Image (cartoon, rainbow, N blue to C red; front, side):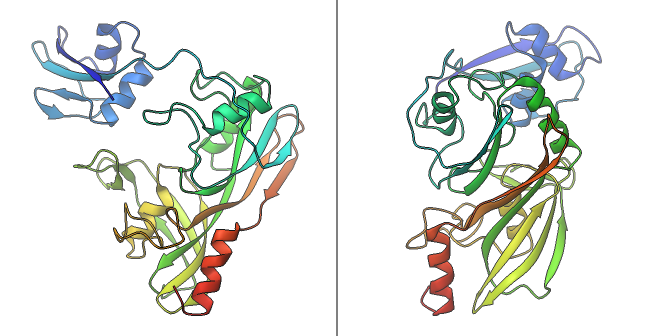
Length: 307
């Protein structure tokens, strides 16, 4: 992805860096400036800084801007496994390999392209043209349930539930090794990896709060089938947390063994259940989907000791 590099000189003392950038770069919002700082795309006097860092007159800020996003995402007739749908929300069972929204290297063929076609452009616009209706995401190589909003009111209501942790998300996974306890909680803040900006890591100094509750569903020689409930929703949260306690997910070549597992396209992780308060009716809804065939095949191989 091509980028535009800028050198900016601060002209005010004690101004937040994100405010300075949004004021200095035409079209750059403060939230976009914060994302760039978090991604390490902005440095002050040659050093990575936090988004709330404050400038001093004469500070030199180096900013690397990505190419502008496309102005339009086109609907595409891509089959969707719709688990639930009404006038306000749609819940789909995303397959492994499908990217949620357009990004560098994945300009189309995404869940957003499919949703635009299926919903006939009836999706909330809060997250902009690249992420219409998208309230939360799951990784490309993670399968399972994802909820999208069809209007702004529904989007705001669901986003609030994510914020106060009342939107219940339950995953099933297979991790490497035998967990000693039958359940537990990983409470460890997550932030960008200090060296590899494409990865996340436990960062107790600068990371954002992240909590994962886990339970053992099955035990096999060298592996454990677990259920994980997210209290927060950080990028790669389950993958990072399970690796942090010494039990990376089977097939996760980013946070675990680098060698791929035959028969797996990525990490063994499936979003099994969603519980949320319906934004219009106020009623509590639970939506579930079964484990996909590839996941049950892994469990069968573990049962027979043939993984």
